[in-house]
Length: 433
Ligand SMILES: [Zn+2]
Image (cartoon, rainbow, N blue to C red; front, side, top):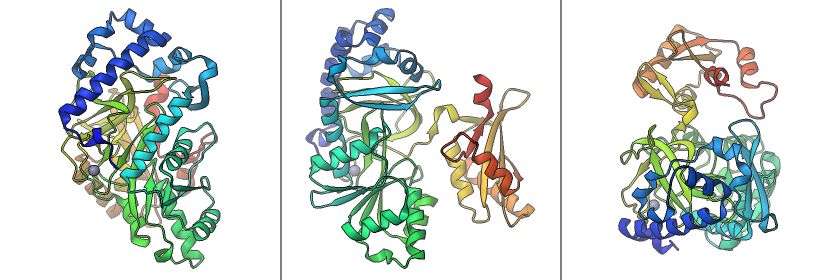
């Protein structure tokens, strides 16, 4: 069932959000130590903010504020807090997020309607291949959403292909919730152990953390690789702790649907002005109906492209394309704006490229330079030229490319304190600290 408001006209959605915004502003003005002060310092009279356009009068909230004044964002007494979540902050220390009982209900509702977007029904069983603990919000949200929907859920957690397969064969889940690249590991394991991928009963995967489509919504290289061996439907979902809301693809796979009852979404340029439909900008959000830590015009740091046209599924809400990149990773190279994921996508296309790492730094003129180090068994000038051609065709510019040994790249990709492989080494950020 699609929530009524998501099928309503653009005007109705706007009016609905303006009502909710009014409540949010009054709530913040009364309960949030941070925003009370923020409104005073910026001479904002919340009673005068009536339309979505009026939001531009309020300065944006940055991740730095959230980190610096973390406790001041909490609007409820400690006894009302049920769940504690942390996310990585901008200054090193994690940022604490608190949720009340109502916030958990809101999270369950959000995930239930997002699952429904991907066609999940009460009769479905989902296998959860992400962490539910470790102060992580997403895993808990999936569990609560499945429960609200009445669907079954198997909490296997992340990794361990053997256990995942044991569980798939034992409980016959119809949906998997996973990081898409992990599906490649499952495929590899299945091949090694003669598991018939065509007869698993799995219909689809809800994919988090990595894009599965290009900006034109066609499958990217990763998802083509998955579907070649295992032809299940892939749904992208995009969410963050700060939003406590997901943007989930419907069966038409043309971007993640906005849930207007949960969040106001703005796409802003560098000067915090709205960009035009389908232009890339930073997703900036205002949460609706959040009790413990509501956020107003919070800049997420994610660069996205939005589509405003009505979707064939009947929803009339904005659709977000795959995340183009993180704002702080934006590279201005020879007059062109680039984000690392677009470069990964090109490099992943070459089977001759065994591994790679991208280094970004400032040259003597203070402008951005890119150096891509590549390891390959098949070292040749032709390969470098071929890769450069692909860069020019897709991104209009070709960065510097050079060969390195697999050992060197391995060492760069796995620095001692990192839990995840590093694809991008950004020397620009280190200098700013
Ligand atoms: Zn749709």
